[in-house]
Length: 74
Image (tube, rainbow, N blue to C red; front, side):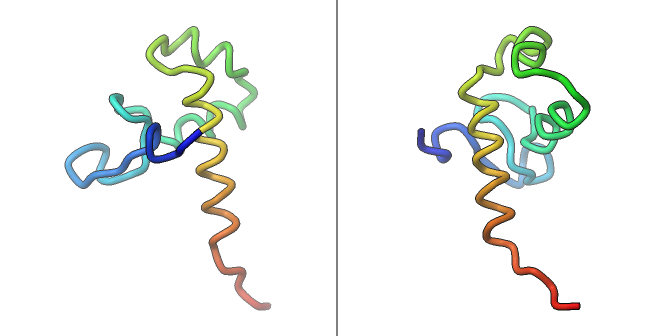
């Protein structure tokens, strides 16, 4: 899966936050729903234009973002 095929960001939509291509659903929305206990199936049922691939892309995007973020020394 290529993240660039599913996750996009532009200043004119969702204030430039990463989102699922072709929607206004932000990566952070998907992460928050998953963290709140929603399953991928529940998300897809509530938002039929979001696929399981989109949800996996959001998780992969978040993993890459966390891995790339520097850790502050204490």
